[in-house]
Length: 286
Image 1 (cartoon, rainbow, N blue to C red):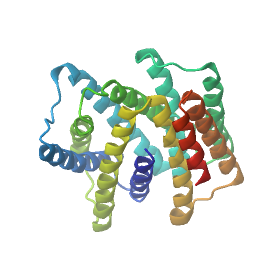
Image 2: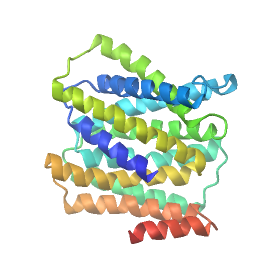
Image 3: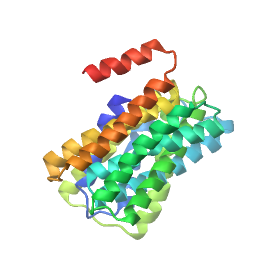
């Protein structure tokens, strides 16, 4: 999961460098490249790409929710500071945990709601003190986070049912269809530099998505999706170094609230699993 977060950070940086391209065009290129890679990867493994019939609706549901979430996220990355866009997106574990509780019967401890509130308070702090964030893009970011939570629950429901690359491939197929439909109407020819960044978006996203799918299928969705919050740290550092976006004391405090809530949630959700608790301790020590 930590590899997935780092690779997604690379995707976000490439997307931030494409402010003039329509967001759906970026979605289309990203999904088209990953679709080709997924197909040949599955073919090399001797696996079927289309999945089983009984899981088809879950695969399509994951594709639709993930594609729309990605489109909305790219919009926020283009229009507001990168670290803020990523931080808003990582509200998704809150929605994921609630949806998993309802549909997958995964249990939540009462204290976890407090930890979710701590993380959410960080988002509220960002909006209240950052004039660069409009209510429109805050709403778009929260909607993206909710749909990402829906996608995570679909992925978790497919655990043990489908090969991870098959799940990824359905996401890409839906992204190509939806993104291609919009791109056919509103296409802007990229420059040579923009083509290079689009290639980076596709490659980073593909390998990040494979790692993400494996992680979610191998652990409770409420735990593993929470690690996404570390992307906010990567985003703030990269945005400051590469795009000159200021990181104020309030920004740092807001992200500290978000990450604190996440780590407390991981610790609580781990229950009696001493190995996972030791993993968190080792991670903090690094």
